[in-house]
Structures are given as structure tokens and as C-alpha cells.
Length: 300
Image (cartoon, rainbow, N blue to C red; front, side, top):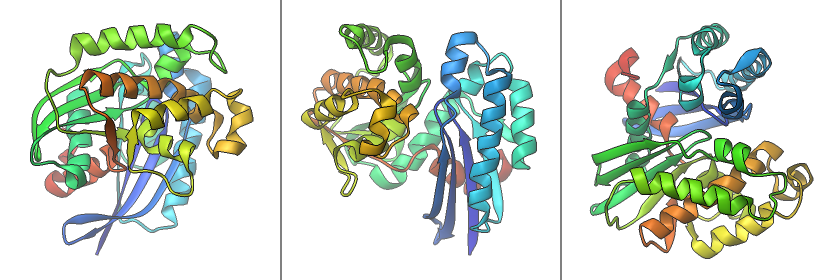
């Protein structure tokens, strides 16, 4: 049996996923995560910078140390939106590769959409037309699909970390959410696919963590408009650091979720849907599936 691992350096988080390959399918063994929030630094200064780079490299080493206990046989690694946008991305990728012991590939926005879709569609593909959304810290990829076929894709600059850093205080003040929604709605109006999907399937940090805000013991696999509105109230109940114990989430995640909920609500409204489906499969699953198909060219 083959055991593989994938590292994804995103705008909010660094994840490592360890999976066994069983009958050509992924069987999750472990999932480790750290949250250095690279996207906020890049949005503010245009680069990752020495301080944030050191934090992120330490996080890469930390999550891989935990993952190494599961004795995977091969590791692949990639960076997405925040790394793509950073002026100092080349030096960061070199340091991250040294820490990981393997090349850290810079994943294009198109390839990111393809990989996320491949991971989500492996579990959530629908016979009719459906829409996949992958909301990260710096961007949201939307894929219009039928069954496991991509019909169209876009990558839009509406990420939970970037929007939270740009618009929201901690906790949000009156009128800040309105400004965030106005900006995000304009971006979606300009770039989101025109379609009438039967369902919306969301992956990424907001989708996977929002059910925990509502019920950490029995997280939902579908979220209604009412559910998301209730989660928003809980996320705004006080400063993020004060809510970490109650919600069981890091303060940085609480802050990003506050913006993420607005994008989810806008997507449901745009596509006239009453609920969304939550996928815990995503880009890392897609990375591993692509590696099984194409070997070290998985990222191309």
C-alpha cells in the first residue's frame, strides 16, 4: 500500500494531508494545519517579508514533523494565491523547499481550480450542472461543472483573509460588513460564472470550519442561509481572542471566517440557492490524485 502526503501553502493556512492509496482512491490518515496568514501580509505590503517568512517556514517544519509520524513514502508541495502575488516569492519558495526537503511548486490559478475541482468532484460530483467554490484566504476559485467535467472556471480576488484584513475591525464595527459585501458583490458580478446550478459545493477553510462554529460535536455537511447568519452572530460576539475557547478555533481563523461568511451568503443569493454543501476534499486531495496520474508533473 502506498502512503502519500501533500503540503499546501495557502493565503491563510499551511496544510499537510497524509493519505493511503486504496484501490486507486484516497483514504485519509492525518491532516495537520498551521495558520501564518501570509495573505494579509502580502495584501498590505506586496511581499511576505522576513518576519512572516520565518513564521511560515517554522510552520512548514512543524506540520511536517507531525505528519512524519505517519511514515508517508512521498511528499509533494505547492503554494497558491499569496505566494503567487508576493514580490519575494522566489526566495520564499526556495526556503520552503529547503524546509520541506522537496520542491515547492508555484501553482497557477488555473491549475489551482483544476486541482480543487478534482478533489471535490471525487466525492461530490453531481449528474446535473453544479458549481464548485474553493474559498481561500486570498482568492476564490469557482468551477461550473457537470458530473466530473469542468465547463468553465474563474479565480476571483475575494478571499476570507484579504477581505477581513481590508474591511473588518476586531470585532467588526457598524457599516464595515456593508462595505465588504459591496466590494465582494461587485467582484462576483463581474466575474462569477453565469449559470443555474443545481447545487453549490464549497471547499476551503471557511466551508470546513463554519459548521464547527454552529456545533463542534456534530458539524453539518450542509449550511443554509439561516445557519450562516447564525454563525455570523456568534463570530461577532466579541474580540477573536476572547472567542477562541468558546468556538475552539484560533483567533486568526475567527477573523477570516467573519469575511468568509459574507462571500458564502453572496454566492447563495447570486445563484438563488437555499443551502450549500460542505466538502472537506479540495486542493490537497486533488494534488495527490494528480500525482497518481502524472507523477512529478502533477502541478503542470
